[in-house]
Length: 425
Image (cartoon, rainbow, N blue to C red; front, side):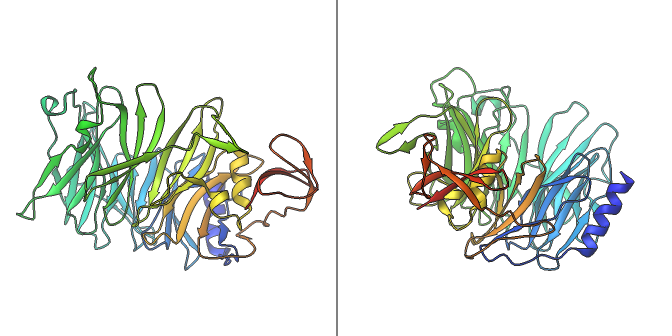
């Protein structure tokens, strides 16, 4: 691992980001490992993530083109990063805030007891509020908030109120002014239904609400969904992404408006080939990123062996989501990311301009990317050569060879032996 840390340091010191003409930039990997992103700051400047294959987490600054890495440890992870480059997560048993200079603040250090640990999930840009979880020696999870360095447990809904056994709570996200906290209830089925905390008029305490009471079924009643889990929240707190599953194990992606209590949902399971609708294999959906206008970036996880993820975007007002390859055809690499099977969008800036995620190459090495949705032209890859796609042959989804790319999805075989999907509008 010493060699890894040396290679990370060398990479951080020597690499610079190149502006991509079509908006796509791929971050460099260390010599003996891969990187995966976990979140993007609301201003689009910082990306948090993890080293795949070792307990090391990182923050990347897209303006200064530098990395900041945690020391090696037994377990660590970042769940988010604010506009100042401070990431939130855990380092061994401690909830931490970690900055670009390598400084680490342990939020639960003074109250730490043997056999307990804590996690920081999110925080505000003014650094007044952090939210997360604490775990007792009995491993019961309790949502909490750190305000100006002082930890307070958040109130929890009762089993009687929810209609199923409540085994704790988890705080996932807080709005910039600290008025709303989005979280999850710990239930017996590991479905983790959504819960909200709103700040009371005294400006100090919070009240808990359970908006999915009419949706989620945690027992054997008649509510329609057995999973109703909050997976991401917009920076302004208006929109919450919901992973949904009904009794027949059909999955949906939902967008919940916290201001109007309105839920809309869809799926990406129906595809059209010509005039015929075809139902592919069963799939689930997980959204990690929501812009302030409600635009959601998520991945579809196909059922079956291995990791089979496809990147999607669902914009407000649109009935169905689109793959990123369909939504941004000028970025041909998105179709290749999908073909390799691990295309995972993980972050979006509050204004929706910048998107982050990770994917795997043909050798199944992970790479982190940043995409500017307002850019056009050719791509640029930071630290590695951008993939070239000189076509040798083009085929349709039915396997029939074509003279050239046609409207819709094409399978392209390149002269260097690679194959990928390309979408032409």
